[in-house]
Amino acid sequence: MTSPLATSRPSVPVRSTGSPAVKVPSTATIPAGSSDVRRYYDSDQSVVVLEYTIHGTVVRTGAPYTNRFISVITLKDRKIVHWRDYLDPLAVFTAFETKPS
Image (cartoon, rainbow, N blue to C red; front, top):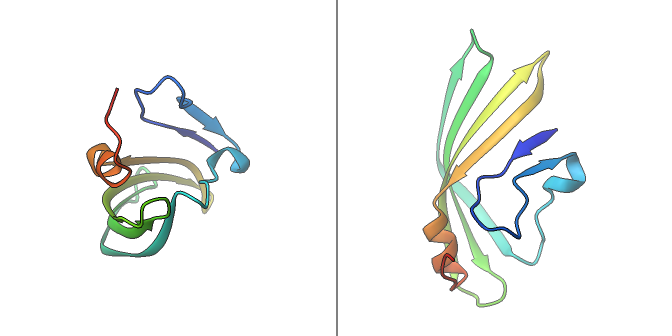
């Protein structure tokens, strides 16, 4: 699986390939759940769009973390062949007490 990563930080790769490349460090946040899930499906293009909110806790600070996501997923032969995520980067910076460079 190949996934483009939307980022402007030079230390973060623009594209990751393969399942090991898309693993998230377990020390970043403790997931608590998701909510507000909406699903849209375009059967002609075999594309699923998901809207959802995730909730968790930042491990380093104990701060709450909430972010809204949109995932665009392309399917072929009942398998995921492409996945893009969009999120609110300011929610990340706020939760992790960092400033964009």
